[in-house]
Amino acid sequence: MGLAISKEGIYMNFFTEQLNLSNEPIQKSPIKLPVLDENGEKKHLMEVFDFESMLEDYLIELEIRNYSENTIKTYSSIIHNLITYMKKEENLYDEKRFLASFRKYIRDLKRDKYLTQNYIYLTTVVSKKFLESNNIYFLEDIKNPKRTKSLPKSLNEKEVKDLLKAVTINENDTPFKQKSKRRDKVILTLLYSTGLRISELVKLLKRDIDFDERTIRVRGKGDKDRIVLFDEHTKGLLLDYLENDKHDSEYIFINKNGNRLTPRYVQMMIKKYAKEAGIKKKVTPHVLRHSFATHLLKNGVDIRVIQQLLGHSSLSTTQIYTSVDMDTIKTVYDQAREQETQ
Image 1 (cartoon, rainbow, N blue to C red):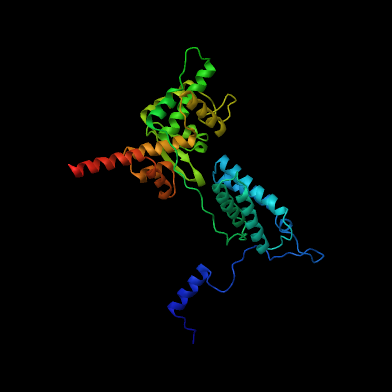
Image 2: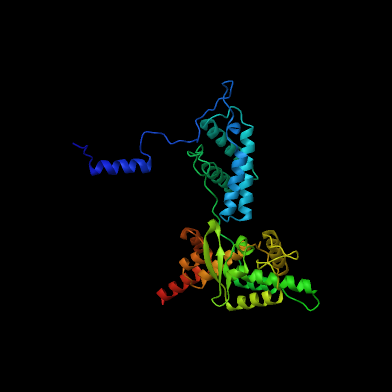
């Protein structure tokens, strides 16, 4: 006679396996700690794990997943600083001591008046991600600290127009300068009319553009593709740029050496034209991206459409923009109140 198992028993076993509700503790290390050397002494965790090689592999993985150069640099710096700190810690031979040392590390960072709360938050998140990517869960019990929430800055419509007008091609300009200005004008217009991230812009390929449909296929964060739109004015500028400045590179925007532009060049270029336009605000590629979203929202575009155009995986990220345009909110509010009192 076979062993009878109830449905409830089957379901309980399933959920126990899926949610790890058994009495077995979660493995926080891929190997049993502490590790002893040939003399029976406990080995330092920096000798047990090759964190430098792990970091190299992790950065390669981020690059494959299409993380921006700036993000990869930031992650690299954060993890490198953590490794350097941990190397100096004594008696670091198991997960409990690693956890205690990490808490001390975060405490020391908080005491540095030059570091922001957002940097502390990022250090915690990045450190956990890096370790967990190598099946090391030493920081599992660490809660992410709060981050400072600030409204994204944006330009108003007049400031955007002034910025674009600042790029003027003169008859006295050398052919090279005319070529550079033509390219810069397209970049500024494209950033504002599409909401592209700077990392996406510098990687744009000629084959990504469909002029008939006025669309660009973009490879964004986390290797996700999306389609962005551009208007007829931007289309004309793009066609004029590609027609007059023909080159063999597969990239749309290149420097005088034929290499694709760096994000740093674009940042400095925008800063230069913003100064010439008399704009007092700090203007960056990200500010133009925020301006793109804010102005769409102001003109009645549904936030879900803006989410798709920006490439946000979560609507909550896009909803930040609903807090930005206070002038529009006040206008709508005042109009509603006037109608009620009439």
